[in-house]
Length: 143
Image (cartoon, rainbow, N blue to C red; front, side, top):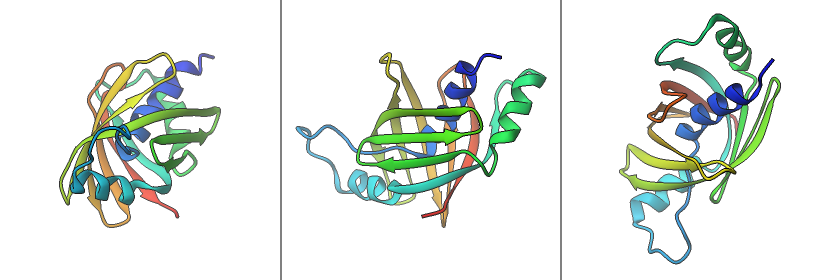
């Protein structure tokens, strides 16, 4: 079974909710710093709706992640650990308002994934805009 697509999916979903800081040499607008602060902590994936839909095998693997996939966000770094999925990514917030943000997640190969998110109490609703894991989902704060 290939886990690479599942890792990318997990990160794509997590990315959206988990977006962070910008480069130290760049001034960070206040709204970006506030969004980065709000994202710090631990989250769990509660929903993800891929677009287009996944093949049945990958949909089953995705379903196993709900409530299990944990995302830890700390100053520009995001760790993900779930059922058969584990990894690290870097991220930065590109733009933000009091209600949401836009971010770029970068994997170890240098590929970037665009995510937007909206704060909803203890949840972050997100949209992953970059193939192959386009879709929308939700992360719930656990700490």
